[in-house]
Structures are given as C-alpha cells and as structure tokens.
Length: 337
Image (cartoon, rainbow, N blue to C red; front, top):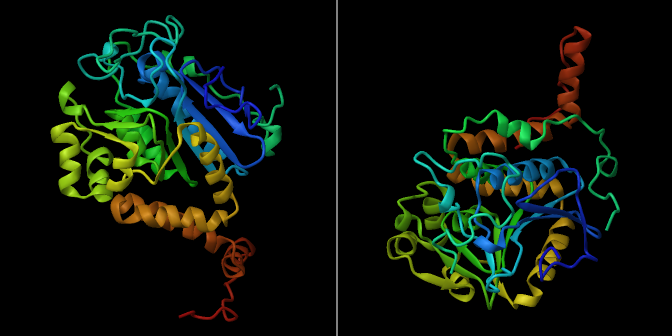
C-alpha cells in the first residue's frame, strides 16, 4: 500500500527511478504527478538521500510537457502509532556538524531508519515512460553515482535547492498536507504555490529555533508575505501548533478539506488547472514570484517572455535575416502601445 489516501485506480507508478524515500506517480486521467515522502515512521523527515530523490523527481516532472501540476504530499499513516505527516523537516538523527549527512551506503538502512531518534517522532502501464511523453530515453547518472561524488564528511542543506526548484518549476506545485508540517517541512509547504490540508489531521508547527536551526529565506520571509509580519514571527518565536482551519484563516493554507477527501480534492484542483492555458499559468506563476525574487525572478520572467517573442513572425524575421546574411526587414511590424 502506498498510503491510505492513495487511490491506485487514479495513478500509475513512474518506475524510471529506483526511489527508496519517496514515491512518484502520474495521474491516469489528467496531466499531474504525485510526489510523496515515504518515511512515515519518522513523520516523513528527510535525509540527504530523500532530498536527492525529491530533486530528481521534480526535475523529471518539469520536463514532462504534458504535465501541468505537481502534487507534493506525504504517505501514511505511520504503522507504529497511526500518525499522519506531510513532512517533519530534516531527520535530526543524522544531522552532523555542518548539515545532514549521508549514510555509509544509500541502501544500508530501511525506509524507517531513525525510528525513535527523531525528537518530533510523537499497475504496470508505463504512463510515465519517455515514450509516453514523446522524447527519447537518455543515459542519466544514477542517484548512487551522484552520491558517490559527495564527500562523507560534508553535511548537506540542499533542501534549500529543492525550495528553489519548487519556486522556479514552470507549473503549479500544490502541497497536499495530510498531517504534520514541521520545521523544514513547514517551509516546503510555504514555498509551494498552494496548500490544501486535512481538516482533521493537518498540523502546522515551526520548530527551527528549538533545534538550533532557522530558515531565513522563503520559510520565514515568504511566510510573512502570506500571514503578515507579526503572525510569522509568532509562528517562529512561540512555536505554536496550528490546525488546518487556523492555518487557512491565517492565509498560509488555501483550503481545509475532510481527510478522506484530501487527495481526491487535490487531483480535482490539478484537473481544473490543467484546463487553463499553459503559457498563461507559467507567466502568472513567474509574475507572482517576480516581486520577491529580485533579479533572479526578473530573469526567469524575462526568459519566458523571450520564449513568447521567439514564436512571433517578427522574431523569426530577425533570425532568418541573420542566417541568410541580409538586413532584417521589420517594416511590417508596428510599435504596439
């Protein structure tokens, strides 16, 4: 079983990768993928291997040109105590002096490794294949090969790179929160484009200062844009726990829905977004981001504007003139106002 809320009739596994810490599926009826943390025994806390897999899945989802929405969630419940989690942040049991450390071997522990050590621990149809998305298979390095290049004595904080991936992927990313969103997991839901949460089980808690950590970027500053400066400081400074309804009232959750309807509703959202213009949705996301992302946000937005310009007859005249060794003739193109 993937998760109690998972509908096997609605999804098919993308088996291109040998993931251990996440699951990766594609919807049968609409252009959506489901990426889920799969360490429920430690409240879906992430370790470096988890982050590698999450980054790989997000990059693959970005390249699926017939997929318009990413659903990010957590599998559950825990077989140990029945608890639900979206993600409880970094697994403190493998946190070293400079960050989170790889295990001796990517496969030397079971998915539930770290049990009892985390302080917060209270179908064969190949829809996801390269052929299905109209591009050739490539010989990509395996996850293990990437990990072999990482020194054993260097801690990682590359969940921050994943935050930027979520921010810049040219399609909406929805956090589907079935339970605890804590610490770095809280920051992940914050950076997603939208959040839908279980009315019964979702809990939002920021524990960064309790473990000597802090997300001084999107996790705090962008949260303040969502809930206001005073409330954002309360989230971090007081470490209160908020349920889904409270989080929705604050503005960091879009909707609280019945637990049993959570994933079905998220899939309905994905289908609704897939009915809209891909270009418009991409430009809207980057437009929303631009005010907070500085020159990087401007570059991303301008790059997509350049892509639109490339598609015009005017731009093609400039290209053709260059390739043909002549001066371009732009006389037929007005100065719009």
